[in-house]
Length: 387
Image (cartoon, rainbow, N blue to C red):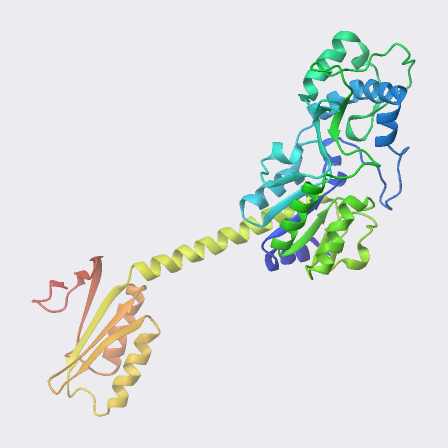
């Protein structure tokens, strides 16, 4: 399937529920956990149970995060994030739910975002519930462990780093309010997404026309559940993702292209179409707002057959709307409203000459506000204005 078909899908379903995954942020230098087949591309991440039950696990997490966090903090939105923000502004994205924790959608300008798995730039105390910025925790750890953050290590997903070091003396950060255990405000593997957050996503999905998956294999049930619900609601599902997804059997459309390039192309295609529609809409509005009046007068006995008058009105009607016609024994009068006065005027003169109506007159009036007209092309000495 092509990105052109994806554009058709978006046009047919103008209010999208978009679910994004790691594939959206790889273009910003943030690695993904899984490969194209949905398999782990590295060791599985730390679980919630490991973090909360083991001091050594927390030391390992915070030491690696001390090295890995700066890469997340420096990461910038890529064209995929920008494209989704543009689609939101155009009205195509009703709700964006992201499984990523990097905050790049918001930095790109998206507003209707639900961070399904939380935000890495926030830290929460597991004891008193206080929240801190990740930047402040980073500064504290750098003061306690000077030079540690500059260690060379390969950056891993979600601000982790492939770091092997002796961590016996590494001090984990503590809550400044109560001295309790600090944890990044994200949903670890093995933990559950808060029920209120899931309910908000389900409510948004029910209001949407369709579900669009971007850059996710959906191997985690926390994201796959929305495909199940969309299927139950008979909402069509499309996926923009390289490789296998858990929801392949439920998809109405699958585009296996790089999501960064494909989303940028999609946003441009829809923007160009919207601009074209806007131009035509403005043209129609102008045509309806500015209607010139063309008046033909000719002797009442100019035609032997009334059908000739009908034929004349029909020909003029191709250039506008025949507003009124008066047929009398002395004079016939036809009034035409038109948005194409030059062509209508020329064709009216040609028709009259072709019919041999040499005594006919043609007058063209331009609207000046309300029901008032001013003469644009007089053929009668006493016709200088009309109300």
